[in-house]
Image (tube, rainbow over all chains, first blue to last red; front, side, top):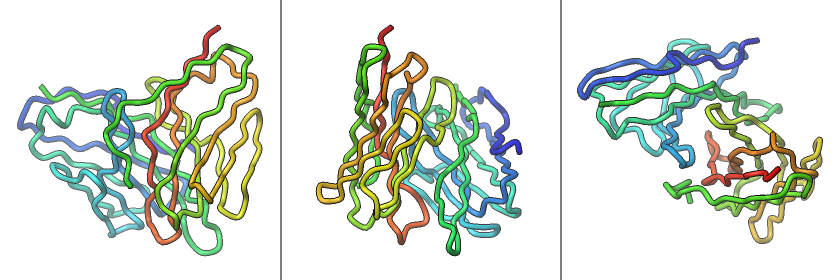
Length: 116
Length: 112
């Protein structure tokens, strides 16, 4: 299993540009998450999804959008990039359900985004 | 409450010593706790977890202690090695939540 993969690894955007950060997991996890991490800081939840077709906002959703059309994929969309969105973005997935409730999140390697 | 934008506290230990990283969690309804390790330039990785029906759990060189009375969690690393240098995050999950709550993290620096 590849686990959680993210593309691209690095990206530089100009103010006002848009882009999609890709995230795929091959562990058949139902839950997926997007976090951002600013330098020297902790993780802030942007959006999460408890299954295909279901998404919900986290702590810092403004300026972002998500969709979850399949179990495997959870792309994050930035519509009008701003310097405040310069950060490292991590995607994660976990399985939660029934009697097996692990809730352990598995993280991707991250995407480093710079907005100039 | 939720993790806030605080700069990371740091802990420096001598190689070979034991390390103790502490975490105060926020929600009395949390029944599952996880420690993650994040090395520079990488995503967080699972280290060890513990459920609220336990107060201690041991892994390889790591031990997690849970004190529900004071809502405190600690991670003990035995015989700390240079490869243990990283940021360590605790996380809690209330039984009714769909998401975990991450702590602000502690930066561990191992002095050779």
